[in-house]
Figure 1 (cartoon, chains in turn cyan, brown):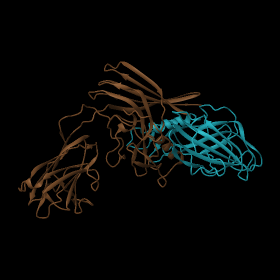
Figure 2 (figure 1 turned 180 degrees about the vertical axis):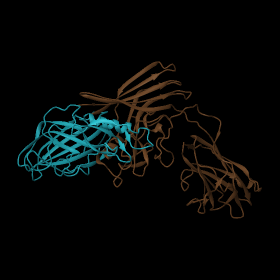
Figure 3 (figure 1 turned 90 degrees about the vertical axis):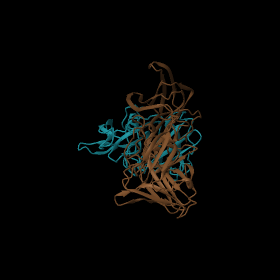
Figure 4 (figure 1 turned 120 degrees about the horizontal axis):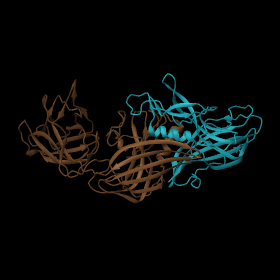
Amino acid sequence: MDAQVKARTGINIAKPDSELVKPGELGAILELTVRDEDGKVTDHRVMESKSFVRQFLELLYAQMQQYYWGGSSQPYRETVLYMTDKNGSKRPVVACYSYQDSIFNCDGGVGDTNIGIMAGTGTTVPNIDDYALESQCGHGSGVGQLSHGAVTFGLPTSDATTSHFTITRDFSNSSGALITVNEVGLYVVALAVQHNGSAQSAYFMIIRDMISGGVDVPNGQTLTINYREQATV
Amino acid sequence: MLKADLKLERFDKRRRLIEVRKQPSRSFVKGFLGMLYVAHANLSKTEPYAQNDILGNSRQIDIDERGVPLLVAAPGGWTNFMNITDYDEVTNIAADLIGIQVGEGTTAPTPTDYALEGRIPHSEHIPEVVSNRGEYYLQQVTPGEYEIYGLRWYATKFTCLWPHQLYRVRLRMYREGSPGTVTVGIRTDRSGADLVTDTFDGNTLTTDPAGEWGDFDFATHPQLNFLGEYNIVIRATGGDASNSIHLIMDQDKVYDGGWGYYSSSSGGSWTTHVGSGYAWITLFEELGQNVERGVLYSGCEIYGLSFSHPNGQFTIRRYFHNISGSNWTVNEVGIYAMGTHSSSQCWSFMIARDVVSPGVALADGELLRVTYVPQITV
């Protein structure tokens, strides 16, 4: 069981979804749960996350290749990988700067719209070159906004064929109107070299999924999104 | 989804391509998920995550020491990978333990596999049948000796630079009275268990203070690894102050690979045998044979990141040259990646393992090229 997953009532899928992730694949399961103010589940869906986008593979490549900046003892010094951040800007990314590295970090806190699971209202089919949600919901209670909870994580676990861990975030709607979430994504941080040669955080989308038909989040209700990264042998 | 294609290509001695195997990679294992988890959750040194390294030891990883590099690219062979790297306090991570691996194991993969079942080691030579000398110290800058008996034990630490199986240890010594049996053990942890022991009748030793060499031949032969640290632990437990062994030593050693330790508690605790600016060490030699055979691991390349909607991919590739003098059958292939901990230590973790069936027979002189192509499709 995922000890840290936030789901509080009713829905708690402890078993990995071997029918959605085929042997040999590393993928993600997307689980969406809407609850009303009393915690009653009003909508629940489990689906295959289909859309690792290019930034995922680029960051994995950077990690495996160990693009490194700023150290004298490394064989891969002063190489960068140019990636498009969530704002559409090309950034020179390194897997590691000196002793820092937060690549793939999606541990966003309350209200953080740079890293973590994000929700949006865009309806365009994902493209491998997508670098951001088409229309990301902001944090707050204004029109079209959702209150972003803190991201939490379930520990890695496994059974005879599958290993997985879960990333969870709650989005509560106090905007005064229904919001239909049509797209979901996962944003992470990585280090990018800046003008003075040091590195700073840059933000990248690594997954974007469409929700067929959208999921309605009425005013006063909460949408819980689980991304369960999973590998099946 | 992230998938990977696996291709094995075999070349004969003239480098003609004689066999090609292609199959989907089936087996990203839990170690990969664990490393992604640490990175995603941004786990600091106060909350590290533990998983098994390639030796089955539980190792903590966090993001505070160069993050979780998930490093797969590697130089060839036994290249010492990083100066901050420390493997198991025995050996640094050599480059052959990072990147694509090959083995002879045939058991189907499971998510919790942490190493290849029967990894074929990196090796460049034909197994030896005659012992050669490895580490030794024969000088006496300032002659000295140390007396052992009963609870008084002595240990000489040395660092192995030549991977081999240990056959013999030689020590120079003389006796006082009748010390009885002298035991020599080899230990990685001075207070731990002996990897192997041999005994010697101390009553047959010379009483000449110049000493003589005593040979300790081991019935089994522990493997000594490149940059591994080992201890020759010497005791004469039946002796006393008048019936003892005197080890011939140098009080001012000029050996960089180790020094001496003495114990008055039968090895329960040890004290470094040093003074201000000098250290003691026994005169010693160790001899053995490199009986390993394997294949020559080249560098592990990562290249070819490319995208064309809806696909993206890159390539991980390594060559394996069989110059072992005999055949290997490659039944399994995997990927080892390096993860880090805030203590500056780095560990190797398996992130993928695939069984190749039937195995690829790699004859002496042949070359195997193994290629993984991780791919995403939107």
